[in-house]
Length: 456
Image (cartoon, rainbow, N blue to C red):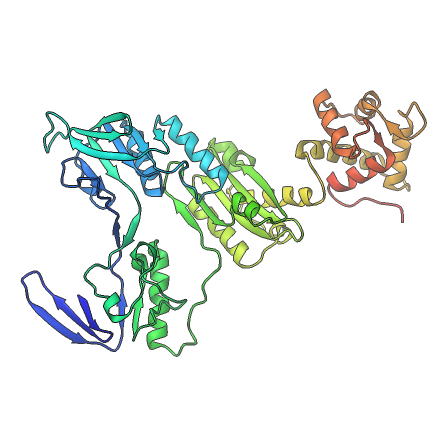
């Protein structure tokens, strides 16, 4: 179908027949199609794009993928898992540039583990049929600058564009943007007549997003306007690589570019009981603003990333802080408890903790001192002072490494020299080589857990 004017559409069938319809409103949902660059001969056997790859009826021995974006790397991983030798050719100097740096590193490590070769800053000159190639057994030569790649399958994955050719949108005033995507407002309205656009052709590059756009458009066209859906600021995304990755909100690079005062915490899957039992690899990374603890971004790599990310999206859109997150009780033996763990570490970081392992050691020291205070009327500060005096050979309430070690052992704790050194560094903010009484009390209050009886 194609528009004759904003309220008239001419439809043509495969037999040459036509029909003209007048309409009081129209929704364009023509989808998207794979981009086809001119140097790629798509008529050659063995040459595919992301739309036609579903037609492949063999497992390639050698595959060249053009494009290091989401689609290209998804297929690279899939075919590599099936035993295909895969080479990805990317014109830019990086792949998956929209991802957080930790997600990028995780996917690159997985590609390397699957022996996928990445050729960055490399342009494809042309693709020709190799000798002996047939439709059933293709042979292809991919010519690069100074190198030839031989394969039996070539996949062009250079992005997608709106499938709007022949719809005659621009002739009736509808504007197209980058990638031939139809430009719309928050209600999917094109600004012309009663023409709306939803789905891939309007930038809704996920099925669920396209469905939400369609609901919004229909409610605007036929409803009272009171039911217009409000767009959420942060939308979650997922890449179906192996392992899957998902993200929502700001990544670390974006937070740096915006010069925000932010913090980063990362929880590996083995921090959850489920991860310990299953042995599954993965991590949850959270970015938060230091002034208020508000969640700015969540990035997950591993199984169930696509399900886990939805809580992060709600947290960002609702302005949830790490303190709010600590109050939420998740079901046991799920990876959702990683949100609690991340929030707990973020809280410590906001309080000034630099080394989480050292903080845990100080928490053990505080717990031991508090236990010794049982059935006593002294305050925590008085207990610290009394404990330090036992090992302070200089009489200045300063403990050097050997004295600190003796104090720790007197509390029944066994810590390595490395752990003791980390504890001293955590408390000794002025880097003097010892822990004095104010440092000792302060670090216990920051790193310890739960209230204690203090002096007023």
